[in-house]
Length: 124
Image 1 (cartoon, rainbow, N blue to C red):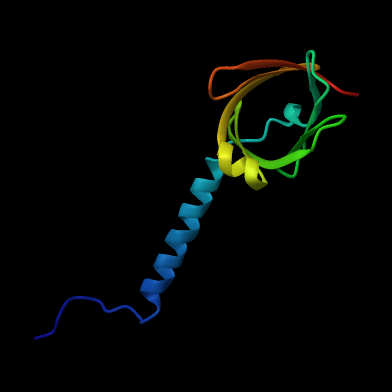
Image 2: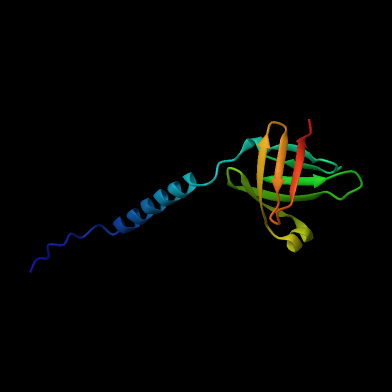
């Protein structure tokens, strides 16, 4: 008996799997949060000497006179939220922090995971 089933060339399944993988990657990458470029720059909290610099390359640094500078990485998790991770031993103690922010002109309001808020002004 002749089977009415069509047999596909050997590499056909691999081609379909590769195309599916590419489509899935494209869909997932289009869903990633867009960077809110207003966050980039140097910021100083009201009443503090430390300056926080948030860079386009996904890194940040916090430091001031007479203090050790802390560095870390961040990524946008939404249009008004970031996930920050300190480098080094501090990062191991603190762990990742999900923060919310609002930038209006030259002011940055940052809300930490514990609800603590800071009001910052852009350093020019």
